[in-house]
Each structure stands twice: as structure tokens, then as C-alpha cells.
Image (cartoon, rainbow, N blue to C red; front, side, top):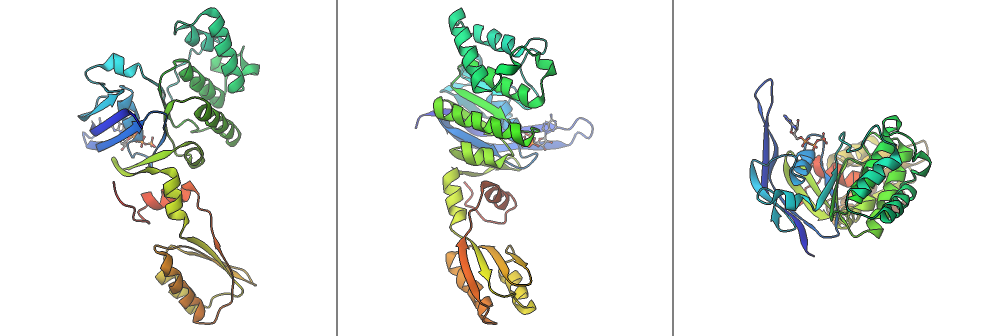
Length: 324
Ligand SMILES: Nc1ncnc2c1ncn2[C@@H]1O[C@H](COP(=O)(O)OP(=O)(O)OP(=O)(O)O)[C@@H](O)[C@H]1O
């Protein structure tokens, strides 16, 4: 696949205003983004995601390294390079607050040299797609945060850029609108062949929308992998074992010692052990613990792991993952 963004050895430091302490926000980060790909940029708070996104869209200058967009160096061919990108950044929605929803869409659609007819068609399509039709005559300043976010994303599509950067698109939105936005983004991903970079803490967004994920931790890339591969990798070794009786204290102690990350739950009749095995053959060690008291095993199921668990295990270092 053809590369559209190339980030090479990029670093960024800040000096804290009050204490003059130097913070390394991004440290020698390199990755590529391919045309048509949906990339999830993840990391815990303060990992360096927003700084990375801001450097890609030219809002922040890197201290070291280079960024090419469509082969153009953003330091040397800034305007040409940035023409390929539109961004919706957290807390910075490029909308006209005193205009209505429709007026905003018409303004940005007209801005790109479309004919009046094309503007009307395009605006109508977006009002439908983003379920904003019934809000079309409301002023942006009176809209809820979720509505403003939907409009900001709709506006970013109007620029017809090949790359769209979405920084925390569902942050602070309630469950319902967050779900709706996820569905809209899914549709956009399916219908339009755009390259999209989404930075998010919202794991269902990443699991459902992204082809690949880059996880940044403390300013460096710790994972660069297809979402599907990561899920498979973690999936194969997650088991839930239902026991016909409870474990005794010696067995529980042994379980915790051998599998510190397992969870054990019990009621008066039965018990369940959930465990993520480092290696598949470790299941025998688990069975040795049950055998100690001839505990009855009722069922063994592979549990479905979701992306949230994968992410937590990686960033907490609970699971050693090959560092790229
Ligand atoms: N303008 C600034 N001045 C000083 N330090 C900053 C500035 N901007 C960011 N930082 C620091 O740089 C580090 C990375 O911040 P950044 O916002 O890029 O991370 P992030 O992964 O986007 O975090 P979050 O998920 O919390 O938004 C943090 O330690 C942050 O406190």
C-alpha cells in the first residue's frame, strides 16, 4: 500500500512555564500511514498523542525528525503538504458559532469552488448522514457538545482532503451520541476511501473502525500492529473455567502465585476462574491446581477479549509485547 504520511524520528519537548522543567512529550517516533487506512492512535493520558497529531497537521513544529505528507516535507512545502489534511481537534472546533448548522455547511462547501447546485446537494447529503436535518436552522452556539462535534466532522469532510485527523472524536459525549457518531464514522470509513487517523481513549471506536493501531506510551511507539492481529494474539490464550465446586484456600493461594493476573469468583455452588495464559501449555499448570483436590471442572470456554483489555495489558506492561 502506498504511504501517504511518513513520520520519521519525530521528537517534541516542552518547557513548563512555571517550573522550567523540560517535558519530553514525543521521543523519536516513527510510523507510516497508508492511503485508505484507518489508523487508531492510542495511549494513556499524557502519552503524546495530541502533540503527534498537532505536528502532523502543522500546528506544532517538531524539535527533531521529519514528517512527509504525500511525499511533501511539511517543513519545506508546508502549504502544499497541509492541503492534503483536515483535522478536528479536541476543544478546537472550526465552526462559526453565530451561524446556523446549515449556514456553516454551506459556507465551507462553497469555499471549495463548488457550484451552487453542488453545494446544495453536498450539504443535504451531510445533513442526512450526520442526522442534523432537524437542527439545520439552529445556531451552533446553542448546540450540545455532541451536535457540535458531529457538525465539525461533517465540515472536515467538505474539504475533500485525502487525510482526516480526528483527535478524541467521542470525548465527553454521552453514550447515545457517542454510539451514533461511531456508526456515522463507520459509514464514512466504508463509503469514502479516505485516510483517517483517530486518536481516542474510546476502545470500541478503535476496535470497530480502525485497521491498525499505534500505541504510544511515554512519548514512544510501543505497538504498531493491525487491530485484528492484536485481538487474535491476546484472544487465543484467554480462558474462562467453570468449576463445580469452590477452590480451597491452598488452591487459591497457588492460583494467585502461578497466575497473578487471573480472577477468581465464587458463589455457594460454583466458582469461575478467568485467566490469560502467557503460553497455551500453561493450562496444564492450571489443571494441576484443580487436581490437588480433584476439583470438578464443568466447562472451559475461550473468552472473547475486547480491545480495552488488550490496550490495558499492553500499557500496564502486564503483557510483554514485541516492541517495534
Ligand atoms: N504546551 C505544553 N506545555 C507543557 N507541557 C505540555 C504542553 N502540551 C503537552 N504537554 C505535556 O506533554 C505530554 C504529552 O502531552 P499530549 O497532550 O501530547 O498527550 P496526549 O497523549 O494527547 O494526552 P491526553 O490523552 O491526556 O490528551 C504531557 O506530559 C503533557 O503534560
